[in-house]
Image (cartoon, rainbow, N blue to C red; front, side):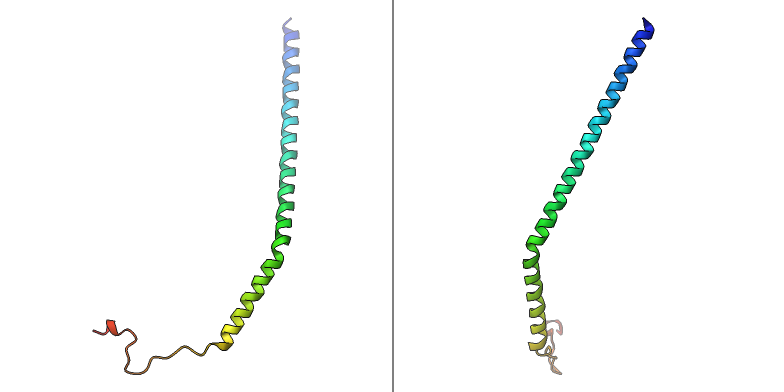
Length: 89
């Protein structure tokens, strides 16, 4: 009788262990699928915004070049004029 109970207990433990392993495997597969879906969405978003990113990159570059060419050098203080006159008192 005890041997039979022991066998049944061992069989139940094996089944539980198998169920745990199956559940863990399913969870890992689900996680991998979610990761893959997120990666695909990220790549789609990146390719979708790429033209806009390039536009702004070009616009900033062009603006920077134009500013560097058109701006005169910064004014130099004139001798005898205090830049911070309020501090000289």
